[in-house]
Image (cartoon, rainbow over all chains, first blue to last red; front, top):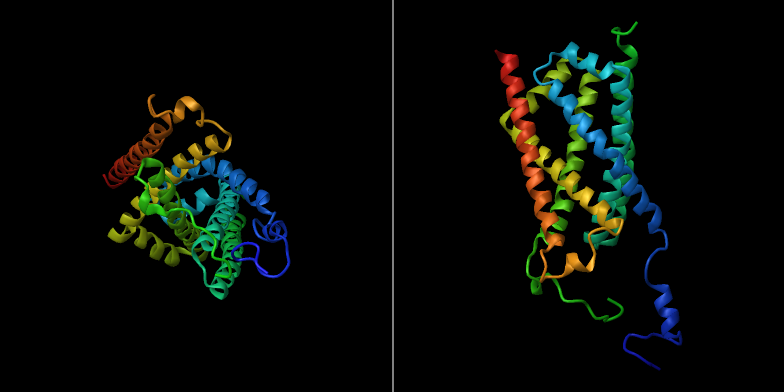
Length: 137
Length: 140
């Protein structure tokens, strides 16, 4: 029996449609993307200013700049927001364009590991420079 | 495909307008900025690792390919940021009024797109003028 093209079995069209559609979990993604976006507006402008200050700076000057407590704090916040926002965006790009199921899942898992490890590496590097700095002891 | 469901007409039938460039460029620049996040990570790890590692990083940033990439990253950042601000306004429901969609009136809907693109270019040039002035000042 086939009441409409594509129907399989005895399920009503409404039942079929309810099985399709969204995953019902997009709101969290949407909000986190916007919240991290708003946070990144001042953070990235501040970061550009910090980079401009460090043009042709020698190594001790770079370490001293990172080790300033306010700089270290905002570098950590920037790293977390940057990798979080980037991971949310890349997730959607993979969902939209990678149609080979095993490759899509592999990339999604690799993305999550990569984002966590990238953020962790940044945070640890900033903490290492900050806490070993002799400039403020 | 289990179901032969109807598809909407694809990109070929649409006239390219600025909002389509914005949408495409937002993704492309977002993807590229993710690579920039890796450069930031490299820089911070290099700083934590010692002067030799830092010099390798600084050498890359100062090379012609490094500077070319940094210019592209600067523009990508400004475009993604400016376009993102427009995104946030439209997420809040601003800019969709009938007057702004009406083609007989001044099309603000598309004007903001051109403003975003122009602002991203101007801000990129501004950043690099400042960087070049500072670099030449440090060298002198």
